[in-house]
Each structure stands twice: as C-alpha cells, then as structure tokens.
Image: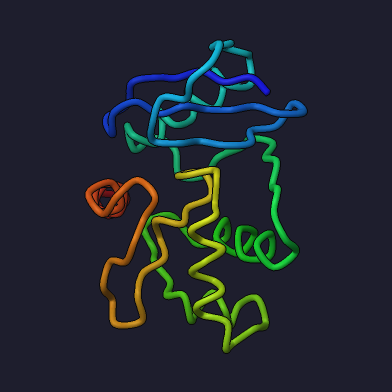
Length: 149
C-alpha cells in the first residue's frame, strides 16, 4: 500500500492507494513511508478542484473493501448528487433494506474513502447533522461548500 499526505482547507489528509485504486482518504497523517504515485496525485488534484468548487464528480478507481452490505451502502452514497443530502432511512430504502437505517449508519462509519464516497451527505431523518469520521466541523464545512454553488 502506498500513501501520501497533503495540506487541504480541512487540514492534513492522507490518500492511500492499493492495487492501483484509491483505498482510503483520511483526515490525519498516517505513519510510515510516504510515496506519491500518479494516482494519488490525481486524487489530490481532483480533491483540490472539489475544494475550489470546480469539481462535483470524482473520476477515480476505488477499492471498496467491506461486507456486501457495506459496499451496497457505499455505492448508494456515490449516487447522492453534489449539494444534496439523504437520511440514513433514505439510503436504507434505496438499497432495498428499509429497516436497516442503523446498519446504514454503521456502514457509513466504516467508509474509508472520505469525501469521494460522500458519507458527509447523509444526515439524520430530522435534518440534524450526525456523526462524521472527520468530526462535525468537517461535515458542516463540506455541506456548506457544496451549497455555495
């Protein structure tokens, strides 16, 4: 696995690549040797375009490692349009498991590819912001960034 850290408007993020696919984007520095590959650099470029509000859709090969249910959830998350939000219940219905809101939340929590798989676009049924791996400050930042267009 290769990884490289960059400064962003959200602080440092680390992009990881495995098997020629993006395997993780995290809001922290990851220990170990840093290797910037062309794919990692492409992911960073696309993230910079996103932060500059010049990119709404990412075009990168992703490595989704999880259970069948988690992968269903993460695939559904990628279909949430830029600037839109859905509830955990909405996602559960989209994937054909209408009673699985809590399991959708758990899958959301296990998403390793932040921003590109936009789990920040999932909110509580009552419209409240709920937990986010990068913290609620980061979630608010991302949602506000997308609403500025």
